[in-house]
Length: 383
Image (cartoon, rainbow, N blue to C red; front, side, top):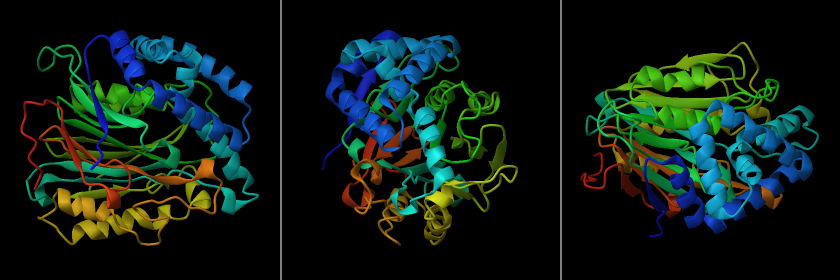
């Protein structure tokens, strides 16, 4: 069974980035080419993307200097420019502006494609282990498979001192982990959203910087701040949870936040707005599969109330109803290759055990790989 690479990193931001850049150099370069190709397929000119990326690098340096220092290390390690690394780290903002224009045009609906993550949170009262479990399928560009990894960052001197250790999943070249758990038992999963306001707020804290700041938090309230404290350039769904049995799903559009909480111990989310009604959701116009994935996933889990474990979750994440646009996503070969999407990874996080479980590719083709935050801790499955 193939496994994702795990990089063990320390407290110095520049050194973290340099190791990341050196160890993942070929993957970073490939990811850069993949995203530039995707932007150009969506109608963006390379010169404009790079000009915007340079502006994002300057913004990140002001907004979060430590994150900027880590980006500089990645650039040095990969022998790329800071602008090229900034493109990857702000690719969400850049890409969603491109996709927003696609949603508005809808001239050729069959040629449009978007990510299709399905996320979930399970309260301890309905799991087999009594642990809080969260996770998702991360469905995105098929070319990214094999160009992602896990970073295990150890930097604290004990509870509440400095910033917490964390382990998270990210793309080669991107410093912010979009799926992960930290030393305090705070976990994160994400989903893409689309509204017509995406891109209207020019420079705001980028998505991947927000992800890092969530995992930088020692307490649950501080983990929510990076999402709710400032408005956003693009829409994102953040599922944030704590090992003590708290889960909040935040639908964060450029100007508003709406909140979903578990019902009867479970919350699921796909890529269209559910709670937020002040602005229209556009994702389902691009990809109607969002309308059934979360509800279907919830039904699959509810069959095992009180017995939900990693096997239950892996099976549900492998569901192929309406394939290829299923929970377990596979590329739609009718689309141009740069727009084809797959489940690049499936993830489940045992927040109490501080352990991330991931697959290398679609879960129907790969078993969970256990990645504990602290390697000395036993990695028994949450069952």
